[in-house]
Structure formats: C-alpha cells, structure tokens
Length: 453
Image 1: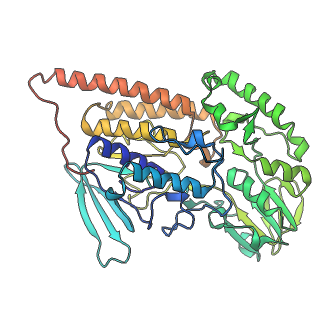
Image 2 (image 1 turned 135 degrees about the horizontal axis):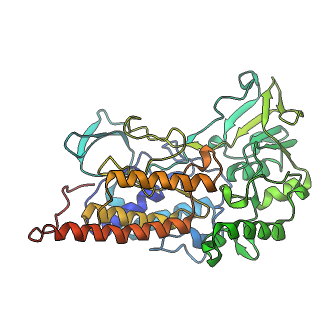
Image 3 (image 1 turned 120 degrees about the horizontal axis):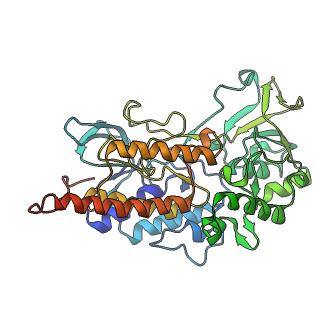
C-alpha cells in the first residue's frame, strides 16, 4: 500500500478486516495525506483557514461517521482528527510505516512487483517483492502550472506561486493580486485574499458555475446523492440550472458572464464568500490571460491591470513517480483503468481514489477497497484484458459526451453511476469465479499467492 491518506486508510481498514497481511508505506511523519496541514512529505496544499466544501455526512466513511459535534463543513484540523480516529478505531497504525518513501515499483517477469523504499534519513534503500500493490498516493499534490507558460510570465517581477504553496492572506495585504483559475481553491483563495488586498482579480478562461454551499436549505453536495441524482442527465442539467438560479440568481448580478457549459458538465466550484465579494466589488472577474508584463497582466478582452502578485489555482497533475512512464502514466489527465481501479494488462496492480466525483470521494473508497480485497482473495474474477480495454474505451466515450474536455475533468465521475457500475461488476465477477470453479470441480478455491500486499 502506497500512501496513508484517506484512500490508503480505507484500503488498509478493509484488508485488515479480511485478515490479509499487508504493508503500508507513508512518506510523511503522520497519516492523513493532504488533510495534514504542513505535512512534511511536501504533498499537502491545505491552507490555514480551509474548511471542507463537502458536508460531514457526505465525507464520512460508511464504517465510521464523523462526530455529531462537528459543524456541517468541518475545518481541516477536524477532518485530520477524524482520519486519526479512523486509524485508531480499526487498529491501522501498526500496519503503517511512516517516514518511508516508495521510490520504485517495477513488474517482475513471471508475476509480482519489486518495491523499493527508503526511510527518510536512512542510509540505504530496501527492496521487497510483493504479488499485489495498491497505489493510494492521491491526486492533489503535484502542482500543475499553465503549459505552455503564458507569454511574458518569465519577465513578470511580482511574486507568483501555485495555490499548493498558499497558506494565508497576510503576505498579500495591500497588494493587487491576480488569482488564476476558478475551481474550488481559486474561488476560496480569491475571496480570502480580497479582504485585505488593495485589489483582487479572478481570471478564468471558462467561467464556472459557482454553487453556494447550502442549496435550498441543504448542503449542496446532498443533491449529488439525492433521489434526483438518478434522473437522466437531460433532466438533471436543467433541474440543477433552475436550482442555481433560484438560490443564487443570475451570474450577471456578480459581474460574471453566463457560463457556456451546463452546471454538471464540470466539477462544481463551491463558494459562498466569493459570490459576496464579487457582489461587493472586492473581487473583479476577468477572462483568460493574454500575456504578462513586468508589473501587469493583459487579458483576452483587451483590458490590462497592474498586478503585484499571482496565485495559480490551476490544478494538479496525476503523478506516480515510483512507476516508470512505460509501465503506467496519465499524461493527459486520463487513466486507462477499468472502473478507475485496474490497469488491464498489469495484474496485481490496483489504484485507489483516482476518481473525482461532484461530491465527496470518501464514501467511494471503502467499496472500491472491498472489490480489490475480493480480487486478491479470488472471490471475484476480472474480465479478460481485452474486455476491460473495450469497457474503458466505452466509458471514455460516455465521459467525453458529458464533461468538459480538459485535464481537470479527466477523472471526473458521476458518483451514482460509478456505484451502480461497481455493483454490477461485483455480481459479474462472482459469476466468473463460480464458472471457473465449476470447470475445476475437484480443485479447492486457491488461496492468495502471497502473504503480503
């Protein structure tokens, strides 16, 4: 198991509950992944004031609800405390090797995986062989800047950082600040900076629908798993557009142009404060950037603004530094994975959490881990590699008809559709296993071929 963030913890709980021996390696000094503020593995971009934009009910694992005492949208310290409690409740700490970085995962001829790890401060790397590897290293840790770079970015003399390095608004007090990107981080950071900055600009090539955190008296994420969520998309999109108009009003009220895409064609950007700061004029919406000058930015509408600092809220790359690109990579933000989990022609390699639902990812992790455990134990069998490859191609065609064609949306999923697909695959996998047993009537069900995962 690589990583002890939410995905690694969920998979660890399931494997431990099945009695499947495993090792979990975490590069940081503590568990929690991106939810550990200032994580010394360098992979957390959490800033000081961050609260979850998903409600506590939606964020909870099915096996352990968040405490009733938590607010509807917990602070990042509370989410970390919940993950610590999760690990303590299910006795996971003894399985996790902290301050241990996995540097290489290499397929071995004849089957299995050679895993090389290095303890921070240790003198030498160690290598072991495993029959299965679960990758749970997250997808919000490798900052992604505009590529190619914006013309003139090299001559800009002000400060320029990715949102991953942003911690608090104090360094921007009294400055003219440009925030680039209108995802969740961009919206929240722009709103926070605008309280003390001289001017704050928010630039987006494609304006996003901004969802309030509460929608008609309910956390907005509850709508993603409500009965309305199972409606066909041709009804869901106009229904959500109507809800937004009733709850928020027209984008023009906030100085925003009407978004080109439907509300559900992109990952939702959720922020109450941004809407208020736009209405107050504390944040000024701008289109995409045309070029930088020494102390200025020109935009695609022909306007130009003097700027002291830039914060790039431009998302993250999908990175697996321990896997050679020839083995597995996602250069365009897409993953060739069956049900976002299994690479068809790499037996024994699984990926956790490489899916981005409109709501919280936590509830998907334990069911995904249960499926992986079933595969390891032989309770279910996969389709053939060719069948999985065809299924991935069909899923990509459906995906491209629904979501924006951008790197950010390469792993976007509909949470209800994914759950249905996983349930169907579990039933089909059990049938495959029964047929395989029927062809070998005298052979017992094979035991797992390794003593570690």
